[in-house]
Image (cartoon, rainbow, N blue to C red; front, top):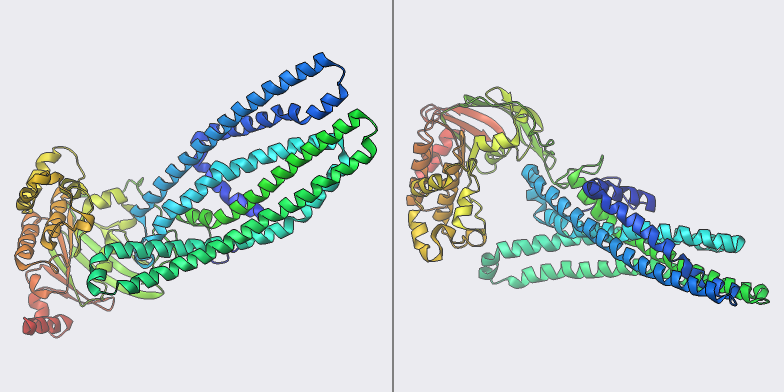
Length: 602
């Protein structure tokens, strides 16, 4: 997953500004940042007596009381500096973990309004990569790299001031020599950033392939071609290894150059000895200066390595930021997959749909996915309190209509109105209560049967009796009794409902719908993959329990909707016909062709 258009390797200051975006997340604990800065500054100030020890020992060699006092001061200062370092470490760790928690929660919340088209096209890898690996990169950057960089700047500032006071000309020359290597390090850091971006893409592929392998475990094993999937995974793993090695090589080179330069520069101050060896005090000054220079060069080397770590974390910073707060030209928040980007969450609007639902109207609605129009010029109305069927062949755009109705996708043009209220004026919270859904393949979580049923519960009041009634109505009593030894409703459903049959999973979906008790019920091919008996039970229950609600059935099996009040025929993204079964089956058109083909096939 690369950067958006026009975004390439950047310089250190741009990277630092991008990293600064996440300061808003640590604002509630900014006192930790203040403590980090203050404790670091105080710690290095307290170490100054240690740096001047050789000078003091040579200047006051004959003044024993003065030396004893200085040694006591140096001991106390060293202990105090150590304690302050502990405070700094605790605050850095606390701030980093707090940042990781709030970022993960924020990223997870994006799933509520994520673009379904992008999720399907990109897979689970992008969200897993963001919430695990990228958040860890940013956490470590704040917990260690940026805080260390901040404290290192303080430390080197103190040291350079002290060195300028002792030997100004030589200090300026040495610092100038060190700055000359800056362009080489920046060039290497750009390569580190490029490789880090590639590693990020490969990690997404690794995650996607592992998720697919676990989800399709049965099919892979039965196919007898596990080796094909293994080879595919091995290729990505090998690419990841090689890219990580390259990134590490560039980062190591960026760290080695200042180390070598530091070693060479450390020798230079000894030339001072040529003109300072005439007195004992002069020797002390030389030793003190050399000690300060060694610490300064060590700090500058650590700062250089920190810039490499910042370059490595930059792709993570960009991708997490794109997800949380899209940048101009950075692509859609849910990843550069097909489909338009949903608008910001609208849970603060006061627009409320008056109940009951009288109509749902598609007004010149169109949606473009992956550069092509999937639906175009959709104009039709779904009457409230009636049974409406949306039919057509596979790929006609039936399910996309539902996706737009529940804001999993946003229309590229036109608008959808519920009781003449624009859909975008309705909060997601109200919309989720308003519309219920039974899909063709309901997702069953690896949780208890109770938790799977209650995931759609809106009102916790009297929930036990509501749950009990849903179990009876959805014909789940036998399932619960068969799992009595495992706790009945507390029994686990297994990964993706593996411990349930297809009909049982569909009845779980029906139970969710009954507990949610929505005003609009959408059924998307909900009886296509189950046995006839279960299909009839679920179909009859839906129509009996929601007879006064707006029911929308999306299907290509016409025999199940012959009693519909209203039928919308969709083909190649447009509405071809509307009417009742009697009207449409007696006049030329696609519906009659489909009806006759299915009648012959049966």
